[in-house]
Image (cartoon, rainbow, N blue to C red; front, side, top):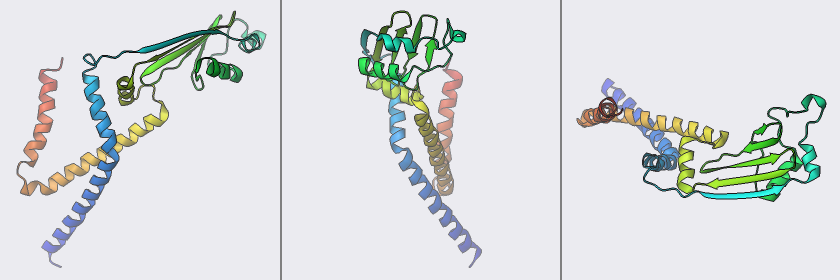
Length: 215
């Protein structure tokens, strides 16, 4: 085999491999890229896109047996509650049945006279307050709509560890997509003289905007 034939064969192998990695990574990224591109637009125009939050507020009273479960368990805890202590299971079930509030996994803020649970989520938030004196319970939930929901997913805001892992994997797939695209461009650049000027333009435009117009 001549040197030219060997070089051509090696080039064909790498080009085929790069195309395979490129299309696989693009398939993995497709839906995520559409989501992030759309929410990038909605976030950039958040001031022009009106949100109409829906707020639901309810009140109730914790039954006496459940109220006793919230009291300090010994004298050392008298006057305060252990930081990070979760609500008892029975109280969690009561909150879910009474208000539809799922407090599992949410940190409880304890004070001398109340327990407060913040339950932020993508596109909204909620909170539950329980009085340790008389069992008075207040619950409020705010829903800011689907646009806010997807905007928060874009930012990874209150979306949990699983969504954070997805964003990491998605970012890695995007990196593979971009790098394989760059190498494919490099391999075709000899026959396409506008390749590098266009790549340079893609770098020059945001650089100039950042230097000259971003305050």
